[in-house]
Image 1 (tube, rainbow, N blue to C red):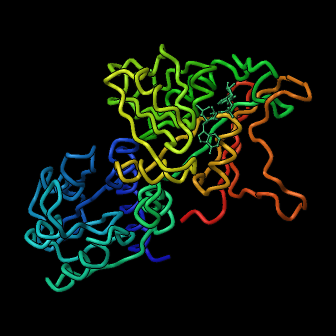
Image 2: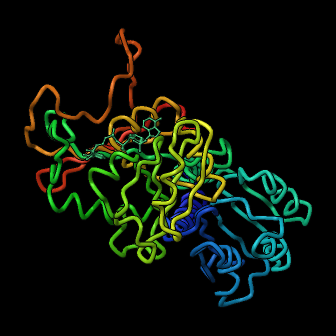
Image 3: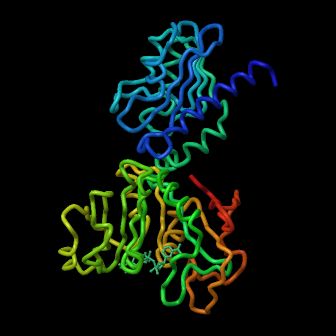
Length: 366
Ligand SMILES: NC(=O)c1ccc[n+]([C@@H]2O[C@H](COP(=O)([O-])OP(=O)(O)OC[C@H]3O[C@@H](n4cnc5c(N)ncnc54)[C@H](OP(=O)(O)O)[C@@H]3O)[C@@H](O)[C@H]2O)c1
């Protein structure tokens, strides 16, 4: 590899690192980082998109400029925007700066921008190089890309189970299967998500809090999906000072008299069936790129069947719960042949004390 290619990769990786600092805070926007070099290839500025409503990465980099950028180059992990959104178009700033060369990792999947930003830069006489560190950029912004292409939120399903594959005893008791370190990791990793979803039964049985315990401000939206609307009068989720809560109910089966149990601060949306895709679409429309499904076996199975889940995170603890009727992470998928079963890919295993954390992807992410 030539010296300049190695240098270019180094700068794009720096832009990707900066972009990742916005993880969990930029939705509905992507994570973007930008680096500016002068005409002698010295670093003169960098910036990243901190959170929605704040300037884009390119604008931040121009705000931080230490020297004139004329004749220099820029590295950015996503195609610069060319439309007036919450902030002015970045393409205009880049053209106005006198930068001669721009390295862009991937095109923006947003139809308002896709390819158009690149065209405008080329028309202004800027050399555009597309595709540097493409794989890493696709990985970093996979949730944003998924939402733009499918109009669904990128779904991660998480559960905690014993070594014998049980998520609770037959009487429903499950506190605690995993160790304290795993549980505190779950609290902080929730900060990567825009919403956390449970089913009505988990709400009734566990009365969960579903927060990051302060790692994220504002906390992710807490979502309950219910067919019956038979929700408890008292729940930790009704305290909206801690985090917002949204109840989504299936109006074809719910008893709408129970609506009076819902406190005023809690938002309510109704859908026409119990298909979890409807939740995924509602949340995508509200700007959620990435959502965490922390539901029990029934809703988890429906969510997988309906294509709402892209990744699975399983915490596995070396404990034996036993019992024919103890709870599994899923109910029956109705498979009769081994070639029907769901095969996961890209597995990654880590140890948390004496627990294991296995992350895997489902096929066909986009
Ligand atoms: N170990 C773990 O990681 C873990 C994680 C989560 C839960 N759990 C345990 O799981 C148990 C609850 O299991 P569960 O399967 O009943 O979970 P759930 O998360 O409550 O999901 C089922 C509920 O979701 C609602 N729902 C809406 N649409 C649905 C659909 N298409 N398919 C299925 N459900 C739909 C229904 O609520 P309504 O009944 O209100 O209509 C249904 O009862 C609890 O004991 C909890 O402790 C364990």
